[in-house]
Image (tube, rainbow, N blue to C red; front, side, top):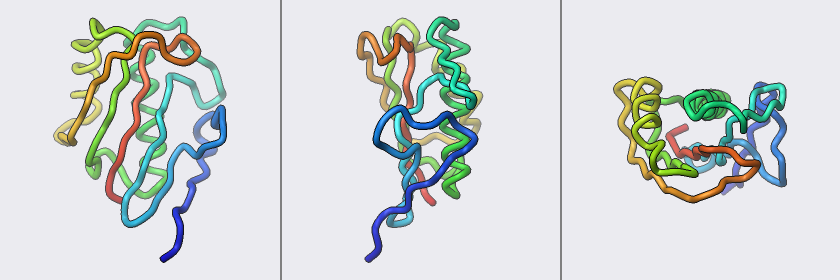
Length: 127
């Protein structure tokens, strides 16, 4: 049995720590927590929640596609929000992004997130 494959993603900003944006193993794709950071590294911490959510989900999609997956192959999504009051706005944006795909999902209110961001999303899907 071979180990996981770590996917290089030049379309995303470099990871800020010792991790990969995505890893593939056992027919599954695991996407690390994505933040509202543009591909050129701009941190959108001061942007409106909706802007942060759209960028974060775009980053998740880029990671999925680069790893041979996609939104339609998602199995589970975990969403971390700094304020649960943002849940309705996130759900609207997420529904549009996910379309007919309805993976299992958890939304976790966390309080402050890294770098002052309002949202972080991680995901798992089929490869």
